[in-house]
Image 1 (cartoon, rainbow over the protein chains, first blue to last red):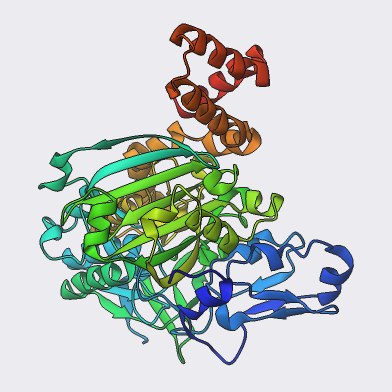
Image 2: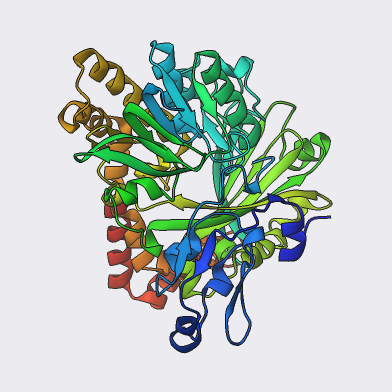
Length: 94
Length: 431
């Protein structure tokens, strides 16, 4: 079967997660007070960002390291680094 | 790792490996650093590799490289909700040596290519992140890695670290990209048997087909979708500028599923098994977004230098060509014993005289034009479909009258002057 949901898609990908997040929301208050759209929760291709009412949950373990959140955050509120060498996403095919 | 190298190449994609390979082949001492578990593990591409630039590095590479299918047909669809206007070219000459392009899967391909570099003497270190460039009096003299005692030194550092290009940004060579300078693209590799692919795409073994899809594939937003045939799988993907994604509040994976279930697309992948899901940014800012590419002790190549021609889906070939040009400059600079910006600017000059910058310059206003005037994707594609439907439906109306009606429908929707303006603007952007 071809996938239908993002959960099914993410299940196809191999991740070697570091214990420490390479993505940091600098100020959760900015998400709460200034950013009604919370657009990162929409455009992130891996649904890494989930708004939990008071703070932004960051599921860095499923990150594709594309860089969209760093560029697309309207408040430059995301510190974006590469995961430690050898960690993070491991593409096996394309 | 305290020894000094002639060259440090950051990244083991097509740009980095082309550079490392050529430098090592010419006797330079090369260290290549890759952050992934293996070359290709962080790299994503729709899947078309052009023969020309690869062949200039490794002649007759198709005899040994892990390729999928030589592309013998390129199709283009202007797709609406329940219809599509298509054109394309199929030529059997593309199925024979020297070929035009191939579909590839990047993880196996990049590993193979990097291994060719290692055979030339490149020292390849995987699983290592370069954190910053080391500088002395404004000159780049090496890199700091995330390994213990991880400082390494070289005469020249080549930044081939991909679209995010964090190192060049640290050096101040370019600012953070705007969302309209990058395209967010997602894709799936879907396993399908060879027989099904051959039947559905009208191919024989060792013949490949590419389909580029405009219009409803992105729900009218600035971008494209694609379907590329591998040996026993197809790559299907879709991307728009990040700014369009934000403006339309699109979830990229929803857009991908919209494409996969579209009535024009669904039959091609029916019954296929998803094998991998991938997301990546493509630098599509073009000519205006190309940063400073040479400095004291440092060069930029490939995606890191924004060298992508989005209109012609060319990127990896530009990466290879730029990586090779960087290598040639370094070899000459070594002879001169001069790695200053003035000496390394030879790379900039070569790059700007080559097809790479000439092509980017030709389309320098294309992305901005199509981003700023959404009617091309949103209105003209459906109009074209309605016109084709009308023209080819036999209903007793004389053809001349049909033509008249079609012309009238074009201009009545947008007005004659606006249509003419749109045509002129589009022509100017791509001429």
